[in-house]
Length: 199
Ligand SMILES: [Zn+2]
Image (tube, rainbow, N blue to C red; front, side, top):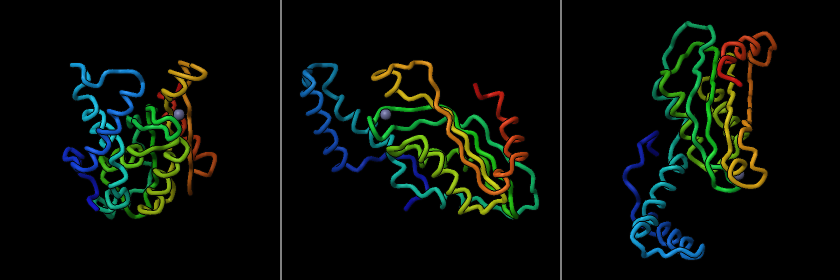
C-alpha cells in the first residue's frame, strides 16, 4: 500500500461504475444528463468522490514511520490550524474546519509535514467528527509512542447548515487526550496555546 500518493490516476473501472451511478442520480432528481452543462458532470463527480475518499487506500502509520527521527526534545510540539475537509458518513456531505494536534516526544519526533498528511488520510473517508478525532489520536499514539498526544477538531457540518435544523453558525468541537495530556495542567497549557483559534 502506498503511504500517500495523490490520487490523480483513477482506476478506470471504478470511475466508470461511479460515473454511471451519478448519471442515474442526476436523472432521478429530474435533470437532463444530456444537456450541455451536465454532460461531463457524472465523470467529474465520480473523480471528485474518489479523490475525497482516497484515504481508504492510504496507510497513516506508514506515513509517520517514514519520517520518524531520534531526538531528545521532550517539550510539547503543537501543529495548529490544520485544514480538515471530510465527508459525513450519514449524508455524504462535507464537514470542514481545523485540527490542532500536539504531542510530547518520547525519544522520537516526526517530520512536521506528516501530521497534516495523517489528518488527510483519515479525513478522506466517510467519517463522523468524533471518530476522525479518535483515528488521528490513536494513530499518533500507537506509532510515535509519545509521552502524550492531544487532538482538537472544530468543524462546520454542511448537513446541519444546508438541511435539517439549518443551524448555520454552529461549530462542533471534538477532542481527545492521551498520556500526559490527561493531566489537567498539561491539557490546559495546550488548550491555552491553541485558544486564540477557538471561538
Ligand atoms: Zn451528516
